[in-house]
Length: 364
Image (cartoon, rainbow, N blue to C red; front, side):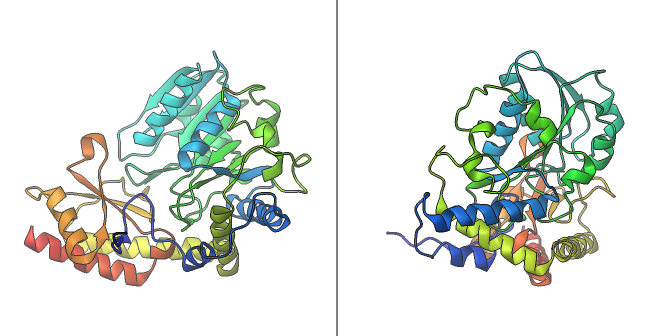
């Protein structure tokens, strides 16, 4: 078998995992019905309630990447003909539009320039009585944070559905305090765990208003009592064979975050992002995301005029084993996306990145 190269992953996708998660992957395999695995699912659900800052009983790790969480969110609360308002300020908000349309919803999109946050009032007043209001907390395509707390205060009778793929475990996500009804994330970003699970949470309010028969058996939240914790969900019943390996990695990560302290984790991400962004500006580089709304964990950088974006990225990969991301769609050649997430949210990572990028630009 060919050797797999070592990479320092600073792109917007999978980040370098916490060592605790990688060590957990090497433990003996558990069956999905093993009592030890069942106890592990309970710990994972409780750990996710901690990072989501919620008491929601339907809080679990969906099998699949963040996209499974996104699809589960819409499938479980949208029925044909429902009105869904989506605040669109990037690529993943556009995916929310696509999914709502696939569920047969009447979709009202409220557009904002990429690189800018959504305006909560404009989104909340786009329709007098929507079933769902959807938005992205941390837009992965642009590095922008939107004010979900303000949107939650204005949601009225609508269910608030939030993408927290790039925010959970890196910056504050307060589901209960912000009035969020359904939210989903992925394990591979700020949670510092290999991809394969989608942290998911649903309020009792949303559960009572759920789609009684989603198009997907696999993503039907009402069938997942076995995975929401013994003291929280209904009686355990077989639904699907969950990956005990991925649960073990997430279990280890959540234990690490609890030990470090959630506010300390947020502070570490903020400090790394602030230092990195200040260093970029000292180098004369321009940031893409709007000032005041920039994510610390995902920085978007405007590619300097005359610089070949792909060439710089290739140089970083070949000379430093550093992977950074290109922009999305129209930004593909004009923006770089750099993640300081999970185990990478450190001063050492910032120093390495700034030095490597400066070297790459000097040779570009």
